[in-house]
Length: 314
Length: 277
Image (cartoon, rainbow over all chains, first blue to last red; front, side, top):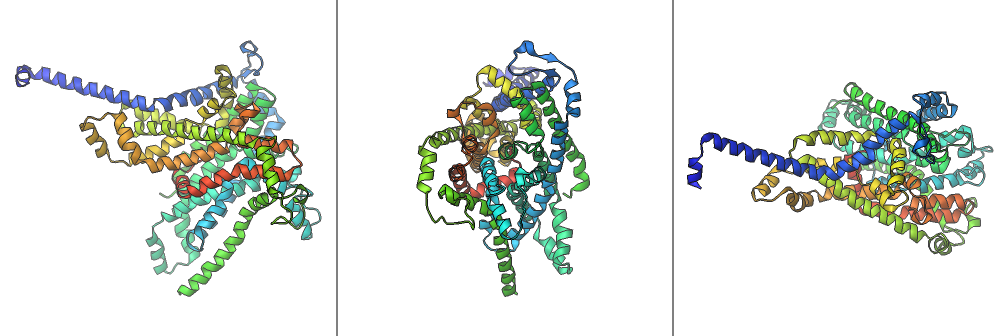
C-alpha cells in the first residue's frame, strides 16, 4: 500500500482523487434521480404532457368518437367562438360573482378563530363543530342542502313560513336565488378550513406585542387593528389567493346541487368545461375553456408574486 | 378580575354555541331523517328525535338491499387505502431525494414539479381521459388510484420535514457505509413518520371524498366509489329522502371517525401544509 502510493507521481495522485470524487458525484446523482424518478414520471405523464395536449387540442375541432382522422385544425376559431358564446360569458360572470364568497368566509373565519383562540371554553368542541362541513363529502353535503332547500316541503322554508314569511325564496330552484344559495353553502363549507389556518397564525403572533400595547394603554380594538391584522397579513394574503383559485375550480357542489341550472344561473367555468367535453363531446372547444381556466389561475398566481411585497408584512 | 374574565368567557361560549348550531344542524337533521319513516321526514315542527323509528329498515335497505352499499364501501376503501399508501411512498421518496441528496439537477427538477402545482386538475382532464382510453386504464380502479398518487403537495410537505432532519445523521451513516436506500428506510423514514401520518390522513380524506375523478374515469356501476354511488342513488330515488339521508350518513361516517382519531394531525396538517390538493 505504502509502496504503491510512494511510487505515484503527484499528478497521478491528483487525477485519481478527482476521478473517485467525480465517480462519487455520479453515484450521488444517480441515487438522487432514482429517488425522485417515480414522482417525476408521474408528473410528466399525468400533468406535463396533458397540459401540452390541452393547448394543442384547443386549436382543433374533434370529438372522442371520431378517430385521429376526425381531428381538424381550426386555429384560434375555438377562442373566437368562446368569447362570442353567451353561455360561456354567463359562466365566466358567475365565476367572478362567486369570488365574493372568499372575503366573506375569510372575515367570518377570522372572527371565529379569534374567539376560539382566546375567549371561549370548549375549544376542541368548536374546532370539530366548525370543521365538520369541510371534512365531509361535498356530495353528501350537497344532497342534504338540496333537501333542506326544498321549495315547499324543505325545513328551511317551513321554518320561514312558520315565522310569518309567506313567500320565502325558492332557493336553488329559482334562477335569482340559486347562485347566492350555492355561495352560502360554499361559505359554510370553507369556514372550517380558513379558521384552522387563522388559528395557527394567531398562535404564532408574539405575546409581548400585546403586552407592550397593554402598557401603552391601547384598547382591544386598537390592538386588533394595529397588531393582529398586520401580523396576519401574510396568512390573509395566502388564504385570499388560494381561495380565489379554488373558487375558479368549484365543481362538485355545482355538479351535484344544480347542474349549472336553473337557466344557467349557477353555470361556472369548470361546469361548462365538463358539460362541453363529457356531455356534448366537443373536445377542442372544451380544451379552449381549459386554457382560459389555466390562464385565470396563472394570472392570479403571478399577481400574487407582485402583490405580495406591497400587501404583506413579514 | 378573574371572576369577571370568566363571565365574559362564559357569555362568549354561549354565543359561539348558538353559532355552531348553524354548522351542526344540517348534520343532525340528516342523521335524524335517516332514522325516520319516509312520511315523517318533512313533518313540521321537525321531530329531531323521531316518534316512529325506521332506522334499522332504512340502513338495511341501503346496505343489504338492492343498492349494495357494502360493494361501494369496499371500492372506496380499496381506492383510498391504496392511493394513500402509494402516494405516501412516492412523495416520501421524492421528498428525500430533493432534500437530502445533493445532485445538480435536483433543484431544477424540484422547481418543475412545484410549478405543476398550480395547474388546475380540470385543465388537464381531457388529455388524461384520452390517454386513459388509449392505454386501457379507463374504467378501472388501478387507473383511478394512479391519478391520486403523484401529489406535489405531499412531496412539498414531506420535503419540509426532511429538511428539518440533521445532516449529521446521514453523514455518519454514510461513513458507516450505508447507501441512500438504507439511510432512507432505516433512518430518515422513521424520523419523519409523524409528518407522513398527517399527510396520509389528509390524503385518505381527500381521496374518499373525491367525486370528480370517479365521475369521469369510472363508468361501470360495480366500480363506483361512495360519493358517486350516493349521487347516483339520490338522483334515482329522488323521493325517498330517508334512504338518501341514510346513504349520506354512511358516506360521512368513516371520515368522522378518521377525523376524530387523527384530529390533531389533521388540524396541524391543514395549518402547515395549507392547501387542499
